Image (tube, rainbow, N blue to C red; front, side, top):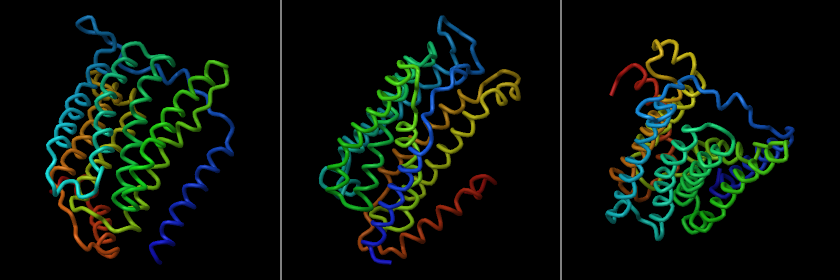
Length: 281
């Protein structure tokens, strides 16, 4: 398969998935979403666990911004590549504030400011991967477009909720379409940098965060109401961010990397998860 045919395949998948999402009826926000397991307050802070577990986002966001600012030549090999990375870590930093604000008083209004910085992080990282795998100028040019689309998806949902007909479809597309396309891009297109294992670690912790979020109440009960699944979700997701920091600090440019080599990296990544689960290094 030629490079052009691979790019066309990626675009077709994106278009098909986008079309499929909008074949479903509008999806309103479930009011039960705001009913988290751990409602305990402490030191005058309501929902203490879910609020304070956002602190690592602030710390790792700052760490990432510092790593980008102090970048070496072998970290960023493309003109302007530091811009989407810097935006990504700024988004992560803002997630720390936005999520804490939301969990202080969970409702649809505060949820806007939780989701908005998340779209900044999702869309800027998507731009990064497009720069690395598809086209450096195209990925950079798409960054502002992606950021606008991400923000618009949140404000559109908020507006439709105010009309009594909430629609989460655009936000769902912004959050999950990149998660579908990124593995496809990693598989089909050659890597520009080494250090793919750190992206694998990041993916593992992100997926774990979604699992912990889903079992919020079950984990709270299982731990004897010591800690909830949602609190652990924040901690797990923040570790995924730390893996991104390590990726840009430890990677090297892979000169002349071929598609076959890229497939081998993807193969090693797929075999990383079972090893991690059983405790092997």
